[in-house]
Image (cartoon, rainbow, N blue to C red):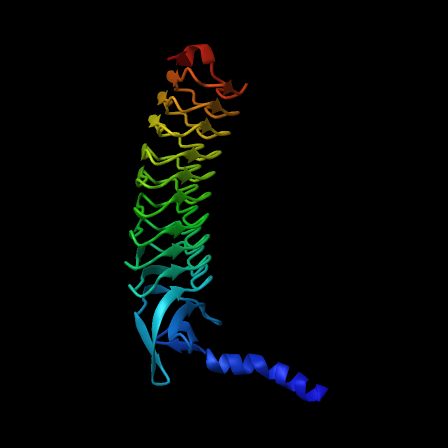
Length: 295
């Protein structure tokens, strides 16, 4: 009896594979869900994707039609010769590291029904020039577009609630960003190292800007903090050497360590009367008495 059970356990993966097969159709590999009639694009075993890839909305296997609903984890990871991808409207999720390290990927046409872009989905796509994130997207995870060093512009979904940690870190060619109304949180290192960023529009809905969010954005000339933000966190604007003026709202209660350290062009900061704490090195390497005045 024990031997029979052991054989059955060994056969379980084979049965599962038979039910949910991995198949190649027209040069693209898919993992199929027989029960849901859905397909996920997956990586190739012995080669990699290259050139221009157009993913279809549906595929047919064994006389059944499957809807392509996701780009699976690492599906195109480090495909060094991949140049462009067209993602159909059937896709709702781009999974973890799906396009990570695709250095020659220049353009991506996104699904208009996309809901989620997972962590590191496009991390290291250093050739990507621009991207439009449709309004259907409600969640972009951390590191999603980190190190996209050629990306000049990005259109962000109007339905995001936060810009996650390091989402656009080291996007060194990014020129301007409009953060949509409805975003309440800009997380740590969100735009850290975006050295070409000349303007950023922060909506009144934002209540929290975390540590190092704009660190090293040395092309920023000015920044307006929306009313409702209560704290300038550690190193939020550290090294923003181009900033000349900052207007802080009356809601600000605290300016933490190194918040404006190294902002050597800073001439004027309006400090609210109700502020309770300015840490010792908030304006490190600057003469505080010359750069801010009480309101």
